[in-house]
Image (cartoon, rainbow, N blue to C red; front, side, top):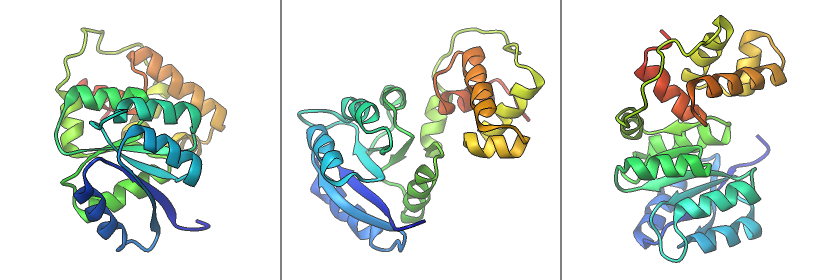
Length: 211
């Protein structure tokens, strides 16, 4: 890595900024570069600081984290958003995922968990706390055939998704091109009726589609 991971925090509570700044100060490979208190400020700091990662509160005044994440995902696709919340909210989880967040962590997470999440997100992985994963598994899903029509290769790809691999890692593991890996991942999403990796993993675990 050429330099430290550049992180911004957007939250309307000062104590959260202080706590995260203190935590990030213990990481040699992470640098806190900007602070914001609402979604509008989040968009501005993207333009001004171009952070690698934004820790984004969900509920904020003026512009909430969901709408801000959606706008950032569209305008600054290279910036990864990690949702930051003090409570477990299934609707908020799914809304942030659909808006483009790559992970969701609780404000009560330990310093080590926060560091792991930031590094994993920077590396291109989707990362969610155990509490959030459980919330996803508890969301009712429509009745669908258990086999989903997945081919043997697609089941291999799904297993690697469950293991947390990104597209490039899947391509390397299966000795296929990156474009072929992306095609298989898209096909898996379509057959499972999901829109992203986290939903695919949650459904795979729920339906025991992989061992």
